[in-house]
Image (cartoon, rainbow, N blue to C red; front, side):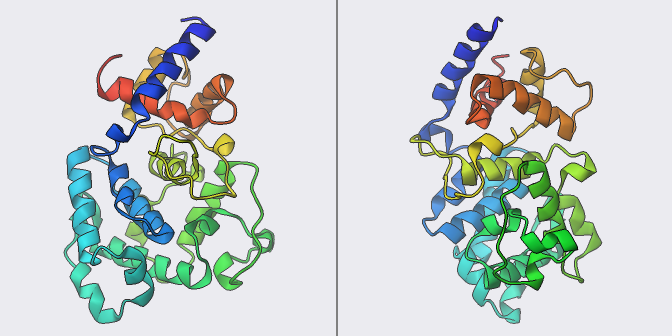
Length: 272
């Protein structure tokens, strides 16, 4: 397809798939069950991290997890006592188990003691330049990063800044340093950052911007992106997601990841 033909085609598909009807059968329905900002952040984070496998299974496992937290994830994170953690034991989704879950809980409790939003976990503090993590200086002023790559690399270091983290849990939080596409975290950032009037993404974060985001690159997006000539890189890694996003920015430099809807929809419905 020529540039304008492809842009018009993808714009039409964005309008088709970026709709409320999309929510019910997608993991994004999990954070849509909540109104409180912190509940949305926590439910959305778990929904994105557990998003591998069949979507129906992912949704059911997320509902099970949140039920174990009495469907009040933020309250559970900040107010739970040690005995309350027993109701989380035995949770499992594929390779994610209760050992991983308990560390996630520990991270969220520590983070929300210092900050009122999870967005702060992706904003590199000024003092990080001299090797001090945000947990060391509660309330330290963040600086906006020029790239999401920096933010994701910082987030992983921050997430595992507690000395007692289980080594096995590191596989559940990816970063560009590992050459990962970071599909799950990029999807989570899309949910939290993108702002439009369609009601699918939340747009509740204001420091990170839609123009900075990197397109989530799952198997459907990767395959369709290659068919449409938006990806030329042979392997699928972080640079693949960057290449795809660079092409999508030619269509809309302010909101390139809106085309995630089009590419994913075309792939999952096997239109291409």
